[in-house]
Image (cartoon, rainbow, N blue to C red; front, side):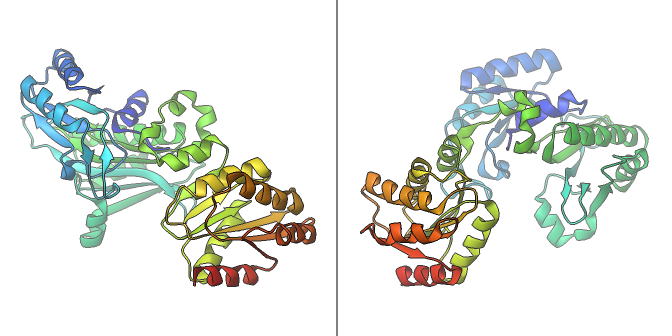
Amino acid sequence: MNLHEYQGKEILNSFGVRIQRGKVASTAAEAVKAAKELTEETGTGWHVIKAQVHAGGRGKGGGVKLAKNLEQVEEIAGQIIGMDLVTPQTPPEGKRVHQVLVAEDVYYPGDNEPEEYYMSVLLNRATGKNMIMYSTEGGMDIETVAEETPHLIFTEEIDPGAGLLPFQARKVAFNLGLSGTAFKEMTKFVQALYTAFVKADASLFEINPVLKTSDDKIMAVDAKVSLDENALFRHKDYAEMRDIREENPTEVEAKAVGLNYVDLDGNVGCMVNGAGLAMATMDLIKQAGGEPANFLDVGGTADAKRVEEAFRIILKDDGVKAILINIFGGIVRCDRVAQGVVDAYKNMGNISVPIIVRLQGTNADIAKEIIDNSGLDVHSAVQFQEAADKVQEVLA
């Protein structure tokens, strides 16, 4: 589950990570009020207005601007709230901005020049260990840094049994070229950041930039946070942070009716029971010359109602030219699924795309008879290759 910047910073702050302080606002008037409160609390005279959407590169799209007085706070917040922000990480039409973060200015003058770093904590799936990735090139796209100057990216892998060891935190600070107070501050920052990552059950913490201020404080100026949805039962307060306005509306609808659905760009809709079989079905469609339009796992209870809901979800995509239903009847009986397909087809009455149904397992022979004798525009298949051939046939 992805979080907004202000929500990610709330989690970081709760674990002792120093953050750029700010307040969220949904209107220009609220932004002005937030700016006044921040000035009283922090003494900041300038404020940074940041669009709160689930996408990076906000500054490039005009979603991050500096306000030097309250009039500019109101003007800029009014411009950003309600805009469709387009960044390299949004759809072409952009994402609607519903709120902004009014943050303190932390680039104040002092004895030293502020410096920006990049840091993230994530799982290295190749080694099964958590990893801290960091660079002196903060404030830039890490993909660009990796492509053009890969020697400036460092990694520190952490044994999950031992956790982050003190020498590893010191190594990060050393590789970033820090010394004195900044070195100690960075060591504390890294330790607190890793603790937050583990205890919040996160899948990603990305801080870009991590800032060394002019007086050698280390803080998170930005925060991109993704939480493991499978662990949200342990964090009821985090679960309430979900903003469904930022998610694909079809995926949200599917989740509400208990379907595991991921929207994709393709022309063949998939309805499968089991994630592994769903992945294999997507490969099958690809090999048959089609493109999967979705990942959809109906689970082990593929009854008529569930099948009908799945049909409705799939057909919301205008790009779907055919639907492949691939069910293995282990727990569920194939004949019940077949009857569910027929009933759903009749109930909906407006399915205009060809449907290929492959049912294998318990009562598969009876299921094939039900499909074949239904009189509907439904093609039954038994073998994987037969289903692939029928996909090719209907797409031709």
